[in-house]
Image 1 (cartoon, rainbow, N blue to C red):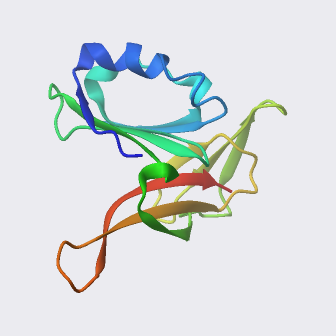
Image 2 (cartoon, rainbow, N blue to C red):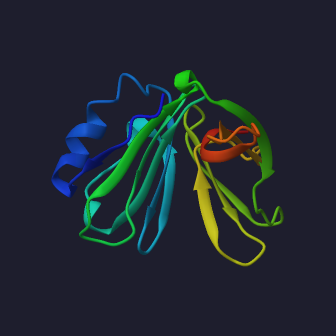
Amino acid sequence: MIKPFGLQENELQPFVRGLENEFAGAVFVAVYTDRMESDRFSKLSLEDIGHLLELRVFCEEKELLCRRDYMGEAFCARILDDNCGMTFFDETHLLDQDLTRMESSGTEEEPMTRFYTMGGGSYEVPYSENVSKIRVRTYFAADDGKNGIEYPVDWRAIKIF
């Protein structure tokens, strides 16, 4: 179900922390003005909310998205799951990786891998080095006309594998 709502900066941390049981085992991707972070949801640090532009917390069942265009604005947020009544379509995308350059870290129980992109950037994922794809689910709604054409209205990350 899609549940859109707004959150001020000071409301984000308590709200997200209140979802820890609902999103147990999930992964997050956080986009800041100067960096991107990804790890297990249980390791999410929200100490730099002032520079946070987008936060996605996702598992196979649902996704929390908190997003804003500029620092200092309120976050527009939503929780999306498959009970929203819309049709959906899954796609698999390859992650941008230079497979000659990657670094493993973390522990055996909680591995982390830093991948370097073909353009020279880098990102870290909370998995061992054998991940190369992300599955994305796009949701569609029918237009209000009589032609029955569906159009995409939202999407969410499902899993990295």
